[in-house]
Length: 342
Image (cartoon, rainbow, N blue to C red):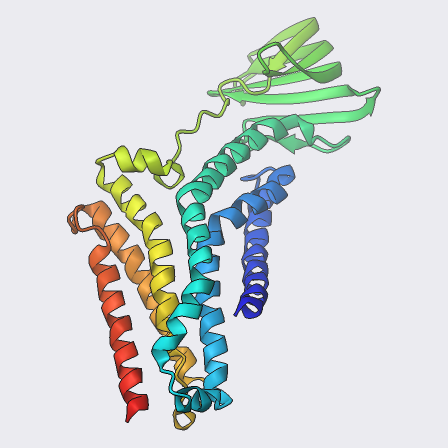
């Protein structure tokens, strides 16, 4: 089971990373994400999806190994030796419990942290990329589409023949300067300094423009754009959710706790679901098992939505759903045991 789980983990991780890199590159192409932040966001996304990935890995590893025992008729030897299907519970739990503890740690601590830090990093990278990615001879538009930059070339780290266009309310400002560059002040704010230039400001479509000549000027890059993100519910710490009485927060807390609980129940359910009947088709048991996994997971998401909307009392949470899943699992054990006994 460990070797199968390791292989399944890397396959699932590659699938998730492939879909994430396509999504992130798409965001970077339209300016919703700084291109320099793509790989960092990939790391945050990996941590965020690890609880679901590890849960699916556990279920698939146990199901694949035990299904192979059924197909190779090794289960016949197992039952003839006087053992029952219940004997698989102990080795499965020894394999599952350490991973479930890791899933609980990821779901309650690391995933919210990765989501919060990823959002902060995304906003900071967007605020920094305005002029740091200006290429010589290329017009660069800011993500907010209110500024355009152009630098003819660079010498000694400074730009030559700098062009800046600003849109404020209905006015348009065009700045032309011989020299320009970036610097940070004592507060960490980013500024664009300009030397020996002219500024033209007015309403587009009219001839009324104000002209200003200057020897030295500076333009704040992050004026009014300093990210002060209030973390979303998904990025809120588990302790804060525990102390909150808001239905949305309690629903998020119930979802985080449901991931390790469901991983444990599904790992046990994989034992009877691995039963293979040669007359029922080569993949019939796998289809039933996969359907059971995703049905349970979708029920968790539905229960979270109902908790958030107040359709389910907060005192109950998702525990009735887990109790029902556990009862079904016990029923499957009884059914398979009776089947072998007959």
